[in-house]
Amino acid sequence: MAVERGRDVSPEAGVAWRPSVPAGLAVAAAWCWRILLVAATFLALVTLFGRLYLVVLPVFFSLLLTALLHPLVHVLRRLRLPRALATWGTLLVAFLVLSAVGYFVTQQASADYTKLVGQVDSLASELRGDLQHLPGANNVQLQNLQNRAISALQQHTQVVATGLLSAGAVLGEVITGLIIMFFVTFFFLEEGDRMWAWTVRLLPSVVQPSIRGAGYRAWHVLSGWVVGTALIALFHGVVIGTVLFLLGVPLAVPLAVMVFIGSFIPIIGALIFGGLAVLVTLVTQGLLPAVILLAVLLLENQVEAHLLQPFVVGRAVRLHPVAIVLTLAGGGLLGGIFGAILGIPIVASAHAAVKYLTGVEDVHGHPLDADDDRMRPVPPPEYAPLPFYAERRTPMPLARRRGRRACVSGASLRRPPRRRPSRRSRG
Image (cartoon, rainbow, N blue to C red):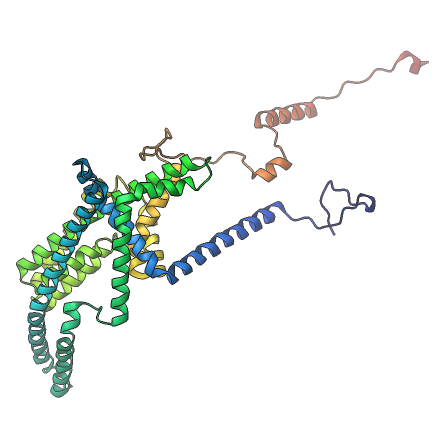
């Protein structure tokens, strides 16, 4: 059994024998148990948040709503209004706007749904007439299938008009979540800075400046993301809604609202809900209007990618597309549609806070390093062992090694001088 080198293992020393472990394996084991500990903690937090979703989701959406509404609060407070009055005025404006949009969408959905059912019925009749000419087609079976589809659509008229919240338990949870979100948003708007200051004072005084700066940086990124994404979503909703209205597509306003909500999911949200609008246009209006809407959808996505995202959102949120896609996938797997929506602002805020704490950026997001390109490839050094190997063996500098090799090679070529015997040895 091997023992540690340089270790006294005699019985008089009182040291037990133990086998030596390679340094690389020890470091790998240390990293593994730390990574497992972090993963277990993260999984425990996700499980806890999943159990407390009725509290966690309203708080997260309150943060997003506060980041969207706090500019209006600042404007009202500049007009010498008290904190409470400015907060109540902002919430009243937001409530009136949301109520008006919801009422208008509901009315349009109730009015256009009958028209949509009629157009689907006529389209199904045309398809049934075309399928009758095919060999082996049964007219009775096709008629029964059409009647079942139309009756299913007619039975779900109220579901489409009022949403999928008709179940009592789900409706109760939604009302409870809205009450919590309204309550928390009010206090975030009125006393958010005081609540944050009180939270920071609970920490040790040594880290308070760092936490205060990181919180400011994360909040700035969150506000920029919410405001910029809301402007981009409004752009998508207005453009798609206008095109649907001009093409005479039923449910144009509800589809535009769905595109607006889906635009809060980066990269794929507008395309998915826009594709739904294209499908409804294809079913109700035909191929040419659907192609026109598809062309408009692709064009506005290019405008978003090359104009709106870099100048509206890109200045506040600097995330690589790979990070965005992985965050969307992970958030969707963990939290569904809510995880996909909340994943990007959470990761962007944490990324900004980490860059501030590690000294990469200042509190305003300006880089502190002279070299802004942190992804620039760097050539590898000639000799750079791991620290624990460097401590065991300190390599000789390259110049000294070359000089030593030259001396040795030169000495081997020269013949050693002949030693003359002394006088004593002669005698």
